[in-house]
Length: 173
Picture (cartoon, rainbow, N blue to C red):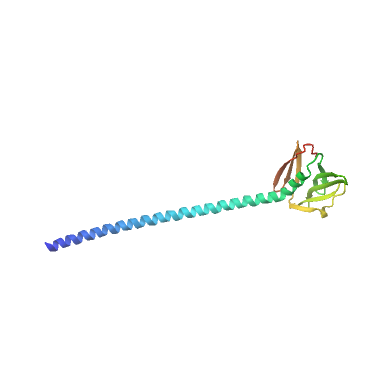
């Protein structure tokens, strides 16, 4: 009997070892599956973050370009905001925004207009002819236009538009 008991114990031990091997295999498979899910989720989060960063960078670059183009124009208008200071002139390639300064020594104009694919700014005596080759380039653009309505000057370019509320509502244009 003792030989048969040994055989039974061996059989039970083999069966128990077989069950624990299956349990370990299931645990390993579950661990690998869980790790794989975490890796996939991390990769998706990384791709989503990179995509968001790219979109934000693109929007920021466009906004920076808009500010660099329209900022100097807005600053010039605000610096010359006085009664009758905003007027329309005729530049070499269309309308010119003319900002008039009346000083003791005479009247001067800051002219902003389009010339050869650039928005340029020229400072001259009032009434003098336009000399775009001496003007300072503000930004590249193929279009430049503006409108004035009830104290609000709106300037339009390729990169967008800006609105300048004139503090002196008797601006002109």
